[in-house]
Length: 75
Image (cartoon, rainbow, N blue to C red; front, side, top):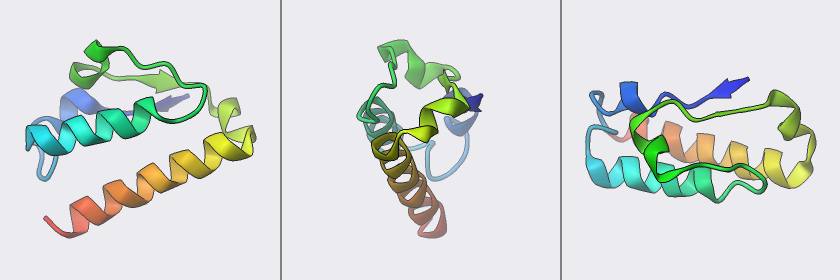
């Protein structure tokens, strides 16, 4: 299971900035086949690891992770 700890990130730089958190939330919502509710930004959205077997999902997920790492490095 892949868990994005949005609630925890709310209190840690750079994602304590609501704009950054919203962008991350939108990036996660854009991952093909992943369903994220609007409430996910305050919680812990989770997805099955097996979903990464799809090339499009894996590519989108890794792009999102790359973006997250860049945000952390630049904070």
